Amino acid sequence: MREDRFTGQVALVTGAGSGLGRATALGLAREGARLLLFDRSAEGLAETAAGCPGAIAMVGDAASAADIGGAAIRAMAELGPVRLLVTAAGMLGPAVPLAQVEEADWDRLFAVNVKGTWLAVRAVLPQMQAAGGGSIVAFASTAGLAGSATLPAYSASKGAVVMLTRSLALSHAAEGIRVNCVCPGSIETPMLEATFAAAGDDAARTAREAAFRARHPMLRFGRAEEVSETVLFLLSGAAGFITGVALPVDGGRLA
Ligand SMILES: NC(=O)c1ccc[n+]([C@@H]2O[C@H](COP(=O)([O-])OP(=O)(O)OC[C@H]3O[C@@H](n4cnc5c(N)ncnc54)[C@H](O)[C@@H]3O)[C@@H](O)[C@H]2O)c1
Image 1 (cartoon, helix red, strand yellow):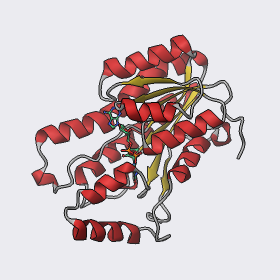
Image 2 (cartoon, protein in one colour; image 1 turned 30 degrees about the horizontal axis):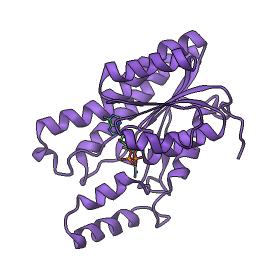
Image 3 (spheres, rainbow, N blue to C red; image 1 turned 180 degrees about the horizontal axis):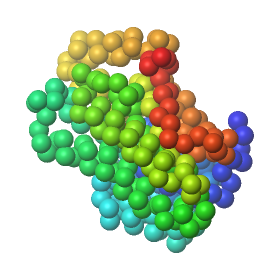
Image 4 (cartoon, rainbow, N blue to C red; image 1 turned 90 degrees about the vertical axis):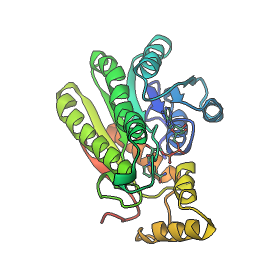
């Protein structure tokens, strides 16, 4: 693995306190990026920051314009203009048929997954424009490209992230700002564990886990590093002519 792709570049990573955001932050740190780590979990952030020398950790809500705006301003003031953005903060929302989703749960899910992505991009875009370019990777999901009976509201929110990505890519391509998203299949993180736990008792949990595994032609779940390495590639100059893609990282699930 190359170790100098991001030397001196400033990166803001939301959802950096766990799972895929953490793996991406650690990868960026290993390759020389200067990081602002953002998450609602102080404990999670502290654990990630321990592996990211010099990183700033900020606790906040991705759905709050003030919180993410404050993070972008602090990154600029203490590290320099943000040229790399990763929006991994996300939640599963209610695992029930759409007709049974409570309005408040729908609103919170879309506030975090969709509005949170938009707010983070909006907060850093002026810095990228002033600096002459940048690269953004959002977290969608295979559930953003295909429907889901298990997590239909989540699927709708991730579909919106795919379209945010494509529209942003078109709007900012001429400014040297690339915008892509990854669409992971089932990846071993605390969120996947929560998906299984939401199935109910032990038997239901085991059945859901087996069903999810069987959906992947590789007959296994993905590892966080298999997603974070894809994110690093999309962020890097090696992907310099790639913008507006929604890239599955899914062991062949959507093939
Ligand atoms: N793990 C998978 O199988 C999988 C598959 C497809 C897509 N994804 C997406 O990847 C992203 C990362 O998921 P993960 O598996 O690492 O989950 P995770 O639960 O391990 O980590 C998510 C992180 O986001 C943070 N977060 C959640 N809501 C937030 C908010 N409002 N403000 C700030 N931080 C918030 C959490 O504190 C946590 O640290 C999510 O967007 C998720 O939807 C995950």
